[in-house]
Length: 290
Image (cartoon, rainbow, N blue to C red):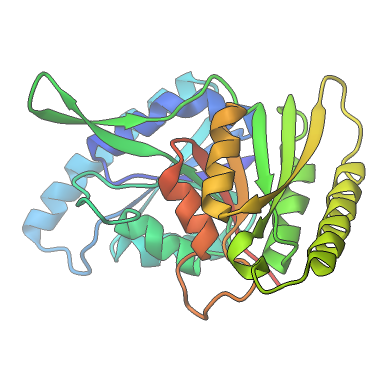
């Protein structure tokens, strides 16, 4: 994957995304399309004046990316941001979409920025969600803070063996091995679902999942300097995965958009969504393309 779509609403949060260019390079990105949707369908006189101002700001973003070594171009659409972004992604299926996992001015209790929410629901493109929090600065001024590690070299791949997980595993092998130093392949047995099973059944499940994780590990080609390990745990999936992320200083989590038993039109599988919300790292979310 060499091309990306950087979605920006020209907020301060979107500007901070430009600080993460080294990470985009680590993923192999060489060309970035700067994408902006105006959010209006009719351009009156004031709209055209606003458009000129928008173009000027986007040109500055383009120059910044070019000075950082990327090829860059600009795409401006008139409609709703999530709708236009999903449609543009369909036209460019080989592009990674980059966007903030929270928008500026988000309300407490909102799980994801509304645009990210809708894009994850509908997009067939891989998505890089750059974790953004709002922090207080100078006493009362709110500023965005993004998680931009030096590299994406410590990766956690969480699998439930669903079709979504299979697609994410393919993405891992094709795009992340060269930049990674440590990869953990993890599966969590949900403790709540094991309560009514016998000890023998639980033992068989552990043996089966241990073998599955071993096969996944062995399916990754050898890479010099790459450490690969597996983790099979029993507990609450979100809690256990969050602990794995913290204990191993993971800086990129790779997951599918949905898991087994997902509800049609659900925005995210409950585990995927919970891990995004509870961990302060970036996430690669891979859709299932049947």
